[in-house]
Image (cartoon, rainbow, N blue to C red; front, side, top):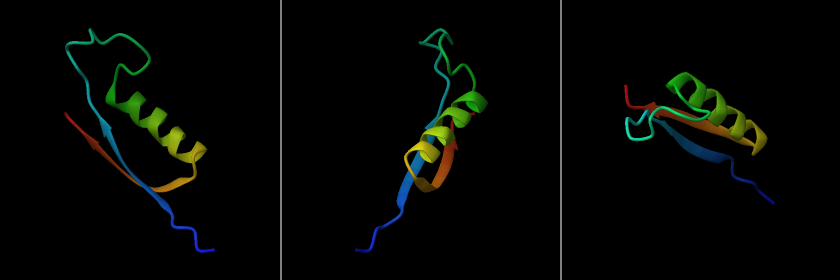
Length: 52
């Protein structure tokens, strides 16, 4: 059985509409959370995209 590696595009953004509340108030913290998600789900091939 040949298992294909999982790939992901990770998109981070800040919204004025959300009032900047909650756990992810910066691009940096969103990247940390998304990278941990990838590690937890065996996603080894990912790239970050953001609105800055």
